[in-house]
Image 1 (spheres, rainbow, N blue to C red):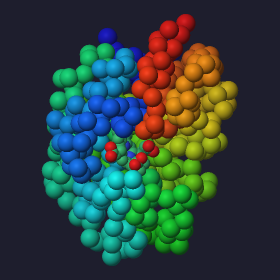
Image 2 (spheres, helix red, strand yellow):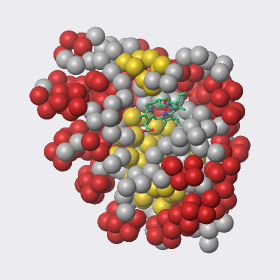
Image 3 (cartoon, rainbow, N blue to C red):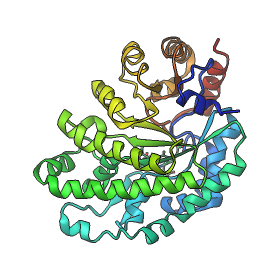
Image 4 (cartoon, rainbow, N blue to C red):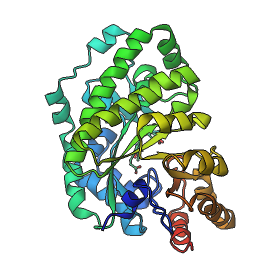
Length: 344
Ligand code: CP3
């Protein structure tokens, strides 16, 4: 029997819709905090198969979800390429910024060393294929090149990404080389993820929404398209979910031009518009406000039903518009699962 998440990505309409949540493993769960305390350094935590397998399974023990998502982070790619990456408590990620050709030359992209560095991720996937319930799909992922490049160039998270947007415009040759390296590394990484058991891949382009139309085509659509095409050459049946967060009307071009099997929409996308202009092209995933999951109550219940009323008559996967935040009460996630499962 084909897993429900995969059926939806093949274009089937399912009632109730399959569901999973971005960042479903994480700091809102007390058992995550307990496991997380066993490793001080967040990247080491991501590279510890025992710990990463454990936290991937935690949300599945509490809630019946249609997918497990590999526990890792998008910044393992710059780390595996040799850039210095650190996670500081309360400050988020910190990287030694790369802003010119000289900086690029310090990166070592030797495929063997790169995959050796990421070998623990492949082991985590192999173990998960044996440990997740048979009806649960295993999602692998990576950051899309633009979003990973924002961290590599800025050196940390940013509000408006002025440094990286500026460099992409003033030194497009340098920036194209960085994106090309990321396309090559990410394709190769995802091909290995599938070899080791990932059944669906999501590409997170969380900062796609800060780009203008031309830049969006060059730095979001084109690299996503190229990665999907390279991975599908090796694994023709793999399903891809794209997530160009904040793309607005450019979601249409993104879907038409990248070859995704599904697209995750953020909470700013109007439901009727998604139904009329996106769903005829591909499976839609989304898009409840992650802060409504914090608020909970009747308003959440009303909105969940409304989202499924509008999008549930076509191929659809229920999810949030962006990842679960740490202040989310776990019982609200339980209630959400109940509402979705009870939907008729
Ligand atoms: O969805 C899942 O359950 C899988 C795990 C996952 C994590 N990060 C775990 C994590 C996934 C899919 C990601 C993706 C990711 N990482 C993105 C794209 C998705 C998005 O949310 O936009 C981005 C931009 C990152 C980069 C990143 N990693 C940041 C900015 C931070 C710090 C954020 C913060 O709130 O401090 C991280 C750390 C991180 N990644 C945590 C988790 C559970 C928290 C770290 C901890 O436990 O100490």
